[in-house]
Image 1: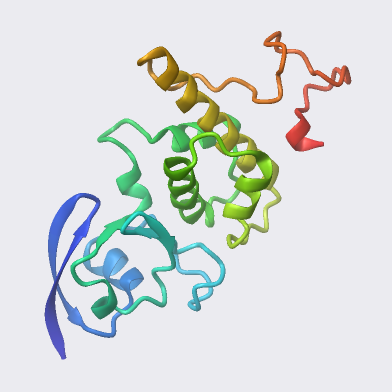
Image 2 (image 1 turned 90 degrees about the vertical axis):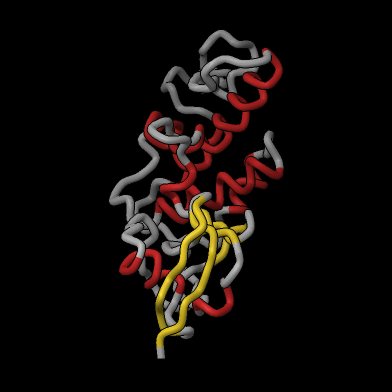
Length: 193
């Protein structure tokens, strides 16, 4: 039996008529037309469906609608500021950090939550935050590098009091020269090694 539920989705208060046991993912995709979050395993284990629930990463595939009533949901579409991508979305594009892209929406919301809580994480912290997300394409190193660069960029932008936040300096470029500190000359950063 359908009931009316209220929740805030991407900053907008929404009323949804649906069965109380409908999954949040179903409501987002099929009722509200937000197709960024994807169905993967259906058990909350793969990360493809992750959204932010009250600012924290959570699976949407196994969250019944009744459990999210009155809460705030942010999908990958809600990370952007209008037409301006979130800095981590921009970094993923710059780093070409996705292959097929199926898992990326969940990874982006988890990365955004991490950066909101810890603006300058180290590589191990990023890897731990993204560990729940399954990616079969092998782009994990580029994803980690994109998150590290986003954190550095956000810290640099805050320190200078503005800017566009679109510059993504290499966190492994200790001397600022743009050269490989290990002297390998292959252009690979320490994250890739």
